[in-house]
Length: 454
Image 1: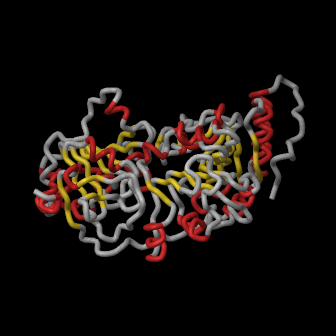
Image 2: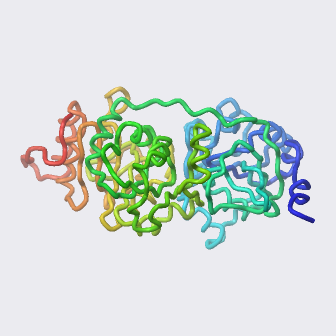
Image 3: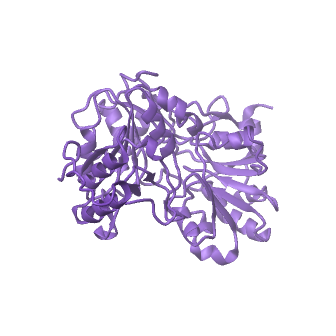
């Protein structure tokens, strides 16, 4: 039997695919692509099984309705791992969902090396149509999909002809997949709306002053960082390299233009490496088909060891808060997971220990309309620390740059107070005096060498 016969034999209707889920199964869905056509039948199937199916998702899309508050009364057993995203946040806020704190690069070691007792029963995602040799790929967003398919008892992939053909190391033969479903979506989804944060241009300008020609860069997804490419963070720079989990659309445009060319990368010069890139038009899709960019599994792209081997690696990631010693929180508000770990710990730590590397954290100085300072006296309300203070490096708000690596607690506090919003500096300075100085001590004036008001 040839591969085409194998493929045809695996083509199922959405209802048939949903019936592959059995009572007691754990169903996994990935970041970066659901089997949308199967979702309605799948929800009905799980209800039919008296909801005796566990759901584990990473950054679930709105189509995964069991995470919404409207479905709370149905009692779905919902769980999130690595990254929650807006789709999973309501279930975490209401404590309906549990959360697995882990890293993309070590996610499957729990199954392969540590004897996890939670099997991957069913995995569902999407893929591009098979090529002439019977191999499928994941259209520019492989993430952890291939790793799941290889380990799952049952895998179901929705075939989407509009997914771009991007150079990749993540290809699977049709015989490695249990079932395929043809998509009901006929064209590429529209580009998401853009909403630049008001402090974005200032932060982009300050980060531009840290980046050097020839640096290899990673930018994380998030409210502040993901728009920096649009706002001039690479203006005037030459020969920027790229090794990043997520590739913002503005960076793809800079690759086509040539500002980001990876020509001076110490490893794999001339090649952009990512696990997520999405074209917004046919011209970009054509460039991705033949351009010097390669997608790989997130478990490979995000390895701390791989990131750290890249000379002059520069990471740029978001934070919800930073305390006066440099503890960086990017996961939660109190004990409620808001984002999750994502790839930030891997890239931040990898860049920090890379030869001549730089780890940059960006955040607005305040939240809630200025009411709350994101530079905090200490970690509050049980919030989770994403980056330990020993790895704190550059912290940037719209008020300046604080350089923390190699500095004492007192010095770090002064640096961070100087880039906090002016309305909150007095209370932060009072807290620093209580926490780090003997009674009656007069602290030195705030530094102005690396931080400035703008």
